[in-house]
Image (cartoon, rainbow, N blue to C red; front, side, top):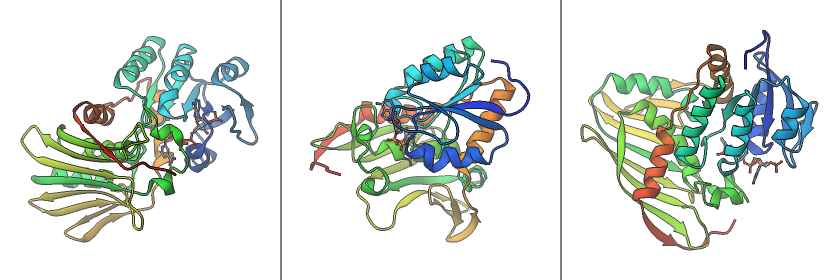
Length: 311
Ligand code: NAP
């Protein structure tokens, strides 16, 4: 859809935790957008038109130019297809879909309809990620490790979809780590994986993964959803210029223990800035590398059954 001048008229779909925590605060301050409508079965956004589903919203508000799809990944494809066929630009929350091929299909559909598709990876916009990429680009890396350990009861209480097929389990946060790792480390592939599935759940609660880069560099990844106390969202690298620690989910960079980059986060404002850029440039931004690694982990991973998990 061609854009009129002025702010992009946006609709938001799937009003839940991430919409309230991040999308609405980011959009309130962003003059590139005017939030016009929301579609959600239960959630509502104050001060704008609300609809029960995306079809009703698109019919009632034809001037919408773009939509942000914020429901869980298993339920996103049909909504994305509906929006793209209506020639709306589409912002996909992470992970962009439940399978690699469905997102490839959406990418082709966006191109066929002359609109932009954005597979957003919020963690890539964490403040120290670019500095880490620059640092690693100037060094010889010897090894790397990804440690993403958090308390699922604290961050995802009673989110049944996350434990269902296509909900990704511990890879829901783990894919954030992968979105950073695939941006700052050399290209890599999984050589072995063990996935711990609670006996009463369809998605893993922990994962132990070995990657290798094409030049033989080992990268170990530990995902754990049972970490109480301090939470760890760290990417570490041993290099010829010292030991790098990118911590806090990409917020802080230190080399040999000395902090070299520490700024307040602005991930969602930056995501919306990027979305406006690609919409105005008439292109899509769909990098599936993080999602492919998750698919590979499920493909290659040995399934280990562990004790039942209850919220
Ligand atoms: P959520 O609150 O559990 O779900 C968002 C909304 O999606 C729900 O409020 C619900 O709205 C709708 N929804 C749920 N099940 C649905 C279904 N079966 N069909 C259609 N709509 C459904 O989840 P969230 O935490 O916001 O996460 C949503 C997405 O954002 C996920 O992909 C997640 O990985 C990503 N994300 C989350 C966070 C976070 O901190 N929570 C951070 C970054 C990214 P209605 O019932 O009103 O339709």
